[in-house]
Length: 401
Image 1 (cartoon, rainbow, N blue to C red):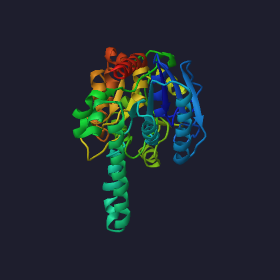
Image 2 (cartoon, rainbow, N blue to C red):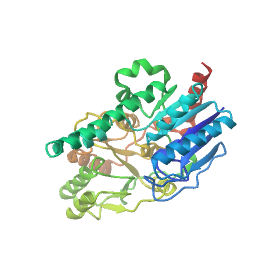
Image 3 (cartoon, rainbow, N blue to C red):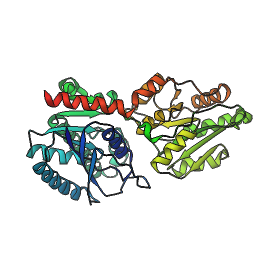
Image 4 (spheres, rainbow, N blue to C red):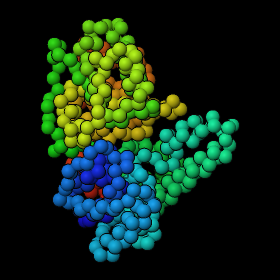
């Protein structure tokens, strides 16, 4: 079987979405032509050399979505007219890939269309803050701007529903995000749903087993982007509290924050004089990030903390690679949600991102008693080979039916 894939992000460009897509397709037994963008907007610093024999990449030179949609659609139609594809798959984010999918489906109604949904397009929690909670304060100053934002939000919502209705198969990274996105439509469309969590590719790792030695520091590493929602502030305050309460204990700890971090958070580390414990390091390329995971004693996951939601519905792709590194993980996330569900099952500690007291207790436990014992049977569930096999089987089943 052969599929045509539309994905703005794809190697050699590196980004979370592009790497997630590559790992899935690489481990699939099917064959793929992938139309992707040569743009490096929203990508990580360096390109990657990742390739696979079952994938042929068709790059489009485009730095804006208007050109991307037009050029990708035209190329897709040329390929469909000259080759036989069993299905079309569009990957979002960004949602513009689904706009191309809608146009192709309209032109080729018999072509099986898979819409892979990453972040929600409509009613995205980040949009709640951008358009409503943050925007309402500006309403009194500029009502027109506020209503314009509401209009944009509504357009996203309508587009989201159109994709859900027209696609023959819908992919979500977690059941929590699936139910959040579909809402009352879940029962109506459940027969065409597939939950495909992010996965790790064991071939990318150079395994170095974690060891605990009471005479050396325990290294806990975070890789990736931190911002105001996905904040290390609770962790920073926790380390400061631990230093005040037990300087000798905290001296056995080393925390590496590798990647982007807001100035307010880096300044707080300086202000609290804990730079000897929390180290800020520059971003690295993807394969080097996997090496760092293998060399660390423990990994750190920091999820976005939305004060108006009881759970974080997002599943960070880095969590899958943390599992692939076979390391214990300290999760700073909501008590419910996909990350918490996976971490609890895997035997890893979970703390609220903003609860510095709870994080301090967890760090104290780790330094005093050693690294938590993982449930490795849960880790293995996120191997890309297993995930890709599930993906292949579902496609064959739905297309044959």
